[in-house]
Length: 161
Image (cartoon, rainbow, N blue to C red; front, side, top):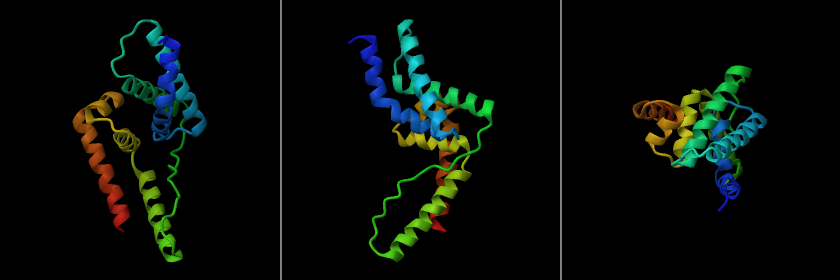
């Protein structure tokens, strides 16, 4: 498999994971798309230069994390609400209204989470281990655990209201 084919395969496999993660860092969608593409360009360049990359997913997420943080600092983006799936499983109007109210509380709770808490949740939801999340974000394993604990507690409180 050539380098181009290898990076293309990784792009198809991981681009949505990288994009969703960048969105959790309070970056507008268009900028998140640019950052995602830049991350894969940097992957190609690193591999072309002979850099040994053990875990391409973690490497890409770390690069995307750094690019997003730089973009946020440079442009001072405001935090955007995360979009959730609006599919309604209930059949009655009353059930739909209750579910919509819960989703609203959940969205509001997500918006109140810190950037670090949202990032830890997203990476963990993608199946990464604490060690991998810590490496990507440049923090300790215990900090990942604390960010997740606080985020989950806030979200649980919002849903229990």
